[in-house]
Picture 1: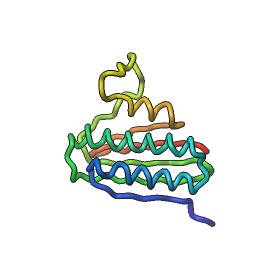
Picture 2: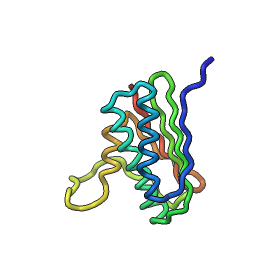
Picture 3: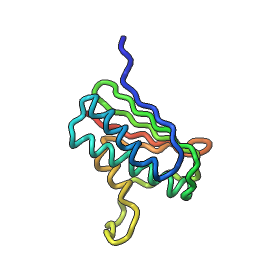
Picture 4: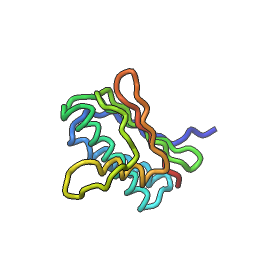
Length: 135
């Protein structure tokens, strides 16, 4: 039986890691049959998730651990992003109109609209974010 394709990355909470992680995840998805449009959406969501971890869970500290794992099973991408920060489980419900002139808040909207499923699971320390997208 063939193993499911997977990608595992361990990074620090440094914004300089955003572009390399995004490119790695996008390449992994493209190599495993996702179309160009979906690849861009997935990359954006992963980028936003990690940026939120850096900003909210780690308060801008650049040396904290983040682990990313992407697997594909039965034509569905499963991305896990784990941190050990101080973040709370975010509210995925959009309760008011987003003011485009105020920074922040768009990452969760992107994740909720561009991925098929998004789940935040608080851990004893930190958070596990899981995102799913069908081909």
